[in-house]
Figure 1 (cartoon, protein in one colour):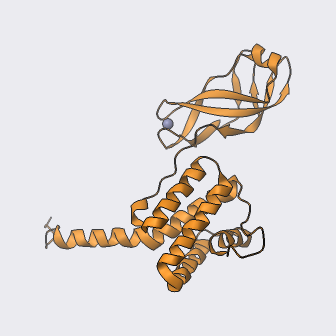
Figure 2 (figure 1 turned 90 degrees about the horizontal axis):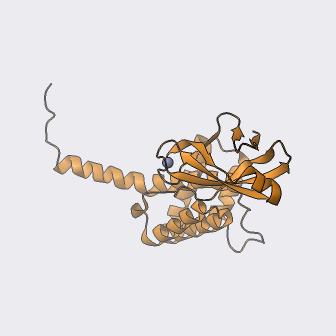
Figure 3 (figure 1 turned 120 degrees about the horizontal axis):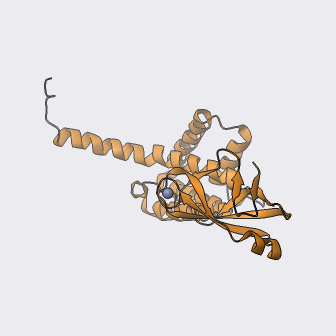
Length: 227
Ligand SMILES: [Zn+2]
């Protein structure tokens, strides 16, 4: 995708433009360009990065993005297609279903991810897993490993990605350095979905099912209404 800013301060984007998870309304939304610094001002100062304001089409709130300038010319400013989100959408998870210690650790992991600190997210995910192994014992650890294997099959993860996540979550701190694989945005994004599914399968699904069954037993009428 090529992105350019014209001397009339118009931002030219290829379709579909910019679509992201809005940090305000949390929906996947298209952004409409609202404002950039003045073209003449930019041409004079030639900053490496240019901050711009967009408007979320879903909620109308402003969203700030930073673009890297690739080339300045009198006709246009070429910008790199990859942008940096100044504010990222907060990642959420029904944390109350987790054991207390794991709840606090995974909450911090989600904050790291939302802040774009991907290696910190990897490290906190590992701590969350270690806390769960202590809580659930050796049998619980094996069950978690089975669940991870199921996620691999279900999500059709390749062996390399699976190996990375297995090392992050099940590796030992006594392993030779570096005992944690490097996390970039893409790996961290997949790890986030893996963690969510792992924790959901292990804690949330059962707890919600038990709640629903209890509700049916005690609240719902004993017979279905006819009609
Ligand atoms: Zn929005």
